Every structure is written in structure tokens, then in C-alpha cells.
Image (cartoon, rainbow over all chains, first blue to last red; front, side):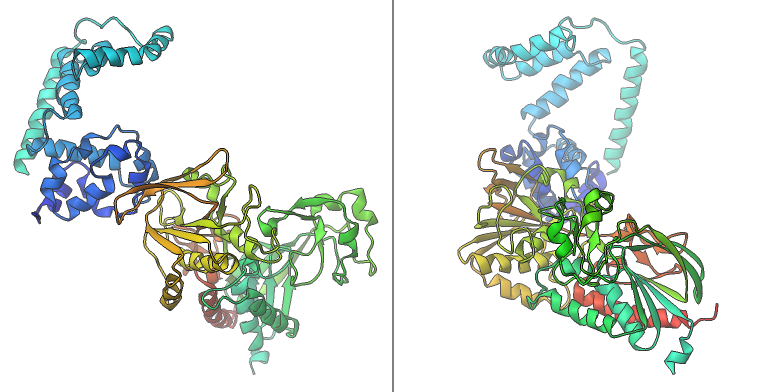
Length: 196
Length: 420
């Protein structure tokens, strides 16, 4: 049982939207509203209370903040107006920066490798490729199984021109500017995190 | 003598609920002239809709009756019902107010004998019971209404039947029209009270969509022998006895999406309503979902008393949503128990939403002109021309409203005594 008394203060200061955690009144409406609720180790309410209690290890090693699908149900219902979705994503990022996040955790892998790689390589989200890599994230067999399960949806989306099966080739116009922008953002973030 | 000093100076009290009644009788009984204006056909306000008071669990009718007696016996109080203040001109000590008197279609000759009601064939949704039953289009609001004169709905007054209704004293007048009167007053007490927060706005709880999701004020009417079920606690969908019931606290309160403040009475009201259930059904299971229990002021003793009931389960949780079983119409309350961290989905016969008090001064009873100061929630506060009292000033229980209104009566006397 370790309590890190500086943990909460650091989260308030350095985790995105972390200062909102102070406002939580522990009503539990977020936990009950979450469609993935039963699959979380800790509900948002519990995560926030653990932060306030200085339970650094429990929070940062938990997979809970990686489970959020950004459905925004909790934000809509939170009686105190906490931007819960953003706080939770902030905690995921914070855990990642602090070196606690499991790089093989599926959402982490998707966010930091697959999605990021996809977008920085061309400057745009290549949906077909991204979807494919997501489907095959756990290997070939489960990818094919998933694909077959979803084939009706995919066909429907094709028919209504909501899905382009042919990956768009090439980079966006002004790709050099895009990479410069990303590099600058990373530099600013690194500076901020070093100062923290 | 106070009488001489008050000559020609009148105190206008707007709102005939418990706060306005108190301010009116307190000011009149020390010699001031009072004009009491009420927008409904009869006095009593929200209190008259209640079944019992906490903590003594007595009927509000006795307190109201005492106040009505004090009004009846006091020639200094003039009561205008079905009336609204349209304009306020001037300043403290010298106001001119314009009051619109809506037609009652029944004159003061009415003896409330009920002959007209027997002959009336038109049924309308009953606002006094929140539309849970139907009443005659010519009626009294409730059994101990004051003034005890019938009134008629305007739509019905235009019908042919309204002209042929029997009346032994000739009190029915379907041709009555609205009148506007101007009055000189020295000070104004704004006591327009509250309305239950509209539970349909709390979308995840399904009030209005789910048959067996009710509200605390509706539950008061269910428990009342003059209510839609003649006092029996039966659920709306099928009339089944309410043996498994949940109360949800802070439904639309302390919530930035709804009323951001605590109404201070709802926890105690639900505890009180739990005793209604226990009285009728000794074996009923009662669950109270709460964020924190707030037994304000002196009322912790009442909470301790209710807590001795072993049939009440207290769950620390703000439920996330309410579903409905499509077949049984049982409401299913879903959320996380914050003491155990365990998620629940519990079904009940009936769910009562403990909704809070919305000041009517925020919506339908704004003070005309720039004569009032409001706080961020719409309560009338210090800083304007009118003095506010009771739940127009802050959410209060009945005892608190009576105390506050007695104090405001004194302020109103001081203000009226100012030379214009």
C-alpha cells in the first residue's frame, strides 16, 4: 500500500484536464453511464478518487483509461460538468509519458503505433488501411473472423459510399508543412513535460 | 397607534401560498392593510397539495385552515384570486400596481353546494393532481379550498352547457370578462414560490416515457385521500400495489445540466414518503438512492427515526439511467454503488424522482419591469424594489418559509411606512 502524496497535485498540473478531478463529487453517474462499464478495472469515479488518494501505481498501471471509446455519455450526464472523456484520455497520455503504460495494451498500441503511423505517413487518415490494421491487430485468424462478422456493415457502407476500399495514394499537399507542424508540437510538448 | 400610521398605506403580497399567507396575516394583524394576490383560483399553493409535513407527519390542512380563519376574520386583508400583477410603477412607499383579474365565471355568491358540478358533463385533466385524473370543468380545487367558491375553465365557459348549469343562488356568470385594476401600495412582498422541476428534462430517467416513473409531488397526491387513487399507493401502469419502490435523490438537482442548487427538502421529503409506503404496506421494500443525505436544520432526528426501518435500503449512488421492462413495465434503475464499486440494475414497481424546487420567479412569475434583483438561479434577492419571501427567495421547507415570511412582513411594514 503506497500513497504518493504529490501524485494528485502533479496530475492536476500536468495531466491534460487533470485539475477537473478536484471537482468530482463521487456520485457515480459516470460509471453507470459507461457502455464499457463492466469491462473497466476502475470506473472514472474510482480513478478520480484513487488520484485524489495518492494511489499512483494503481492508477497509472491500470488499463482503465485505455478502455474509453469517447462516447461522451459521462460528459453529458456529469452533474459537475467534468470533461470526463478528456480527463481519462489525459490520464492515459500521462501514464504513457511517465512510462507506466503497457505498450502492448491494445488501445495503446492502436493509438501510438497504428493510428499515429497512419496519419503521419501521409498527413491524412487512410481509412481502409487503418481499419484493416485494426481488424488484424490480434493476428491473422481473428482478423479474418472479425472481417466476416462485419461484412454486412462494410458492404452497406460501400453501397452508400461511406467507405472507400481503395487506399488514397500519396501525401497531402503541403506535407512538409504538416511534418514541420507536428515536429514543433512535439518540441513544445517535450519542453512542457521536461519542465513538469 | 399602528392603525393611524398605516392609513392609506397598503402592503401588496403577491402569492397566496404559505409564505404569502404568513406575510399577509402577520402584517394585517399589526394593523396594516394588505392586498393578497393569487394567480390560482384558490389559496394554499404547493402546501395544499401535500399529504403530510415532515417531521411530525401531520396534515398541512390544519395549518392552512388556521391561516384562512385569520384572513376571514381580518377586515384589513383583501384577497384577489385568479389575479396577476402586470405592472409596478413608482418606488418604495409609493407604488402604483396594475393587476389583471382573470374571470372566474362564478361570483362570490357561490356556496359551493356542488349542484353545477353534478350537472357538468365536461371532464378536464386535473392540474391539482398533476393531470393524473380528470375533474369537472366547473369545480373547487380540493376539499378545503379557500375562497370556497367554484370556478370554471375558460374553454368550458364558452360552451352551451355552461349557460344551462343549475345554480340555486345564481352565481354562475359565463359572460364574465377579465378586468384590470390599479392599486396604490407602499411596499410589495414577492412570494410566488416554486414549481417542481420538469422531470421530463432529466432524459435518462425516462419520466414521461416510462409509465412507472413518478415524481415526489405526484407521490404526495397519490398518498392524499383526495388524490387520483383516493390515497392508495398504486402504480400508474396497472394499479398494482407498490411493494418495491425506489426514491432517487437529486433528480435534476445539484446538477449543472438542470438545477445547480440543493433544494434542501427533497431528502427529508423522500424519507417522509418512505413512511407513507411503510404505513400502507408493512412488508414493502424501499430503496433510497442518494449522493449525500441532507437532513437540513433540526431534522437529523427525523432521519435517525426513518433509518430504524429495516426495510429501507440506502444506496450511495446517483443512478445513471432508468430502463423499462417492456412487458411488466417495471422500471429498472441502473448505476454504480459508490461504496462497493458494484454496478447494479434493479427493478422496482415504482420509481419516485425526488425533483427539486424551481423558483417560479425564474419563469412564469417574473417581477414586472426592473423592480427585482435575481440571483443566478432566478430567485429574487435583495437589491430590487420588491421584497422576496419564502421559496421565491430561496428553497425552504414550510417552517422555514413561515419564519422567513414573518421577518419579511416586518420589512414590508418598514418599507410601506416610508414617505413616497
